[in-house]
Length: 105
Image (cartoon, rainbow, N blue to C red; front, side, top):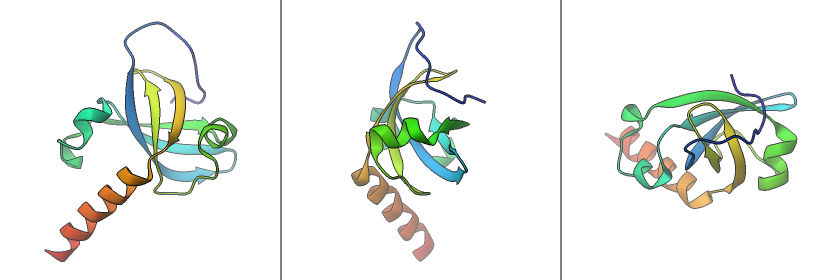
């Protein structure tokens, strides 16, 4: 599991990560291993993801206070988080709406 922001070479992408839970000094993120531009076109069941632990101070210094269910933008590759950018409230609301519609069926 990744546990900190690292800086290395290699192909990187801006992607979404969902805050799965908070465990003490760490946020457990579910990182999508696809560029954010593709995320809205692919169903959740088709997305390849990876669970990571990252220090809360790193996430909160970029995003402010976070809670379970928040969606954040990160720069990553298939092995590590390179940078944490910000919370994406619009994407969180879009995902909540998708879930609401599924529950109504």
